[in-house]
Amino acid sequence: MKKEFEALYREYFPRIYAFLFKLTENRDLSEELTQETFYQAFIAFYRFRGDSDVFTWLASIAKHTYFRWLRKNKRQIDSVDPEALIEAYSESTSEHTEDTVERRMAAERVRHALAELPKKYRDVTILRVYADMSFQQIGDALQISENSARVIFFRAKKMMMEAIQDEYEL
Image (cartoon, rainbow, N blue to C red):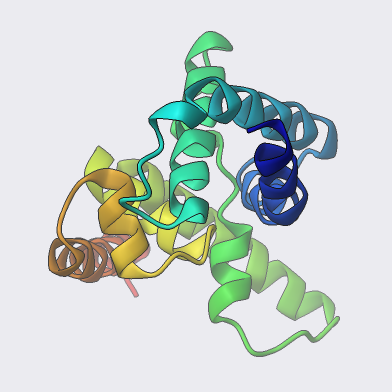
């Protein structure tokens, strides 16, 4: 079992670290949370039945580890920097000052809209955008159907856009 878990650790460490780094934007914290994720996974490894993809299982543990850290440190989910959301949907990488200011303003709009989403919508959005998980993987992680994950993500995007439009009169 130890060798199997070591192989799993080597294979998935970079992806779990990247997922947590996108949430925290802090290398040290991401490293710490990734280690805690794999520790929790090691403890529960005997219970993993293979009903879902290994990455889905690990990402779910990572998400819960991160949320536990937020609660413990009395931080809110809106501390998640959604700059990655902007980058994920932005084709331009211009370095003009005007573009940078616009991107920061857009990031603030997204941060606020993401924070206002109900928990299930926020969870699906974070897993889809930050972890780059498929809808099937999200469904497995959140114990909902793949179709429900699709619908929730679609509605979350719509809710975020409406919130942004209402708040900033766009």
